[in-house]
Amino acid sequence: MSTIASRPETLLRAGRGPVSPARRPSLDDCRTNNPEFADLVADVAREHTVPGRALSVRTLLHLPRLARSDGTVSRRNIETELNRHALRLRADQNSIGELTPQNRFDLSDLRFVRLTNSVADPIFSRLHYLQSARAGSVNFALVEPLSRLPVTLCSVSPLEWMRVGRQLQSQFSVPLGSAWDVSRVYSFDVAPANAISYLLGKVRSAIRQELPSLQVLTTAVDPNLGFTGASYRSANWKQWMSITARPYLYVDGFYASPRQLRNRFGGANLVQLRADNRAHRFEQSRSRLLDSVIFCSRVRGETEQVAADEYRLLRR
Image (cartoon, rainbow, N blue to C red; front, side):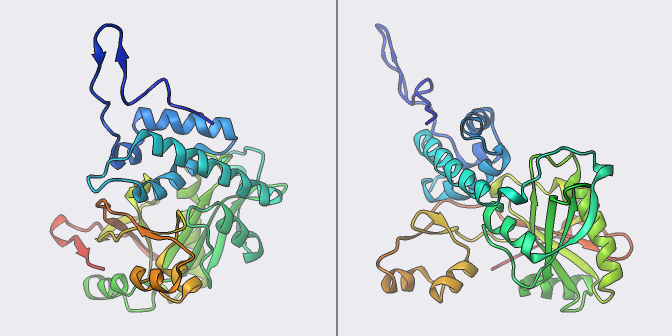
């Protein structure tokens, strides 16, 4: 297991006594990929032979469980989480090895296809940080020209977030039911630069042809996981609104979305879950999380920029 013994939190200097403990890293340090966190991610990823970006995202999803209310977390906990999730990520990779592309191709060599659920669902369920596929989705991918294995893939689903849907209707005149959500995106390490933004452009064209009643595509970008929305911006999507963060929820030390809790336990209220399921440990993050950003793209025509005074923060 990787160690950080060379970077202890308290050091002894010969003849000078102990120095002050090093500053505890913050969640913001980690999600902005500061050098110390980035180096540790790279070391652990190399040791366990897993992709660094996927390892970073998984770890960032779980660090809020261990962070203090001030948003700081110990270096030891960071290291422990990185190694824990590296082991699980490697097992998840091995479980779908037959679906994993091995070769690198230029973007122009990849082929855009509709992807069946039999291929997309195992990838999202094993490798996406939420580790679940969204039911009722249509899947698209850029695939290798020979093996036809997906290199970058996404799922598009009817928008179920009614607060977002109502805001689209009231502010942008988008009728309810005419917005779909890019609900999952995953890109393998062999994907070329700009693969996600290129895929998003292809998806927009396909939706325009296959589902002519749709007007807008949406997605939620969570900055707590280090996401900035760069791929969406490159594909000419625009920030239209944001939505307040809610605490992350965990079962037995692993993240679970409210949807996953409802599917598994019949509800997402932690007080009730703890009372009804004493064999499991239910927790939630305590430190403040950053709000999610909602990016949108018109299916037809240009997507308008929202002025600062029209940018709405939706409450959950």
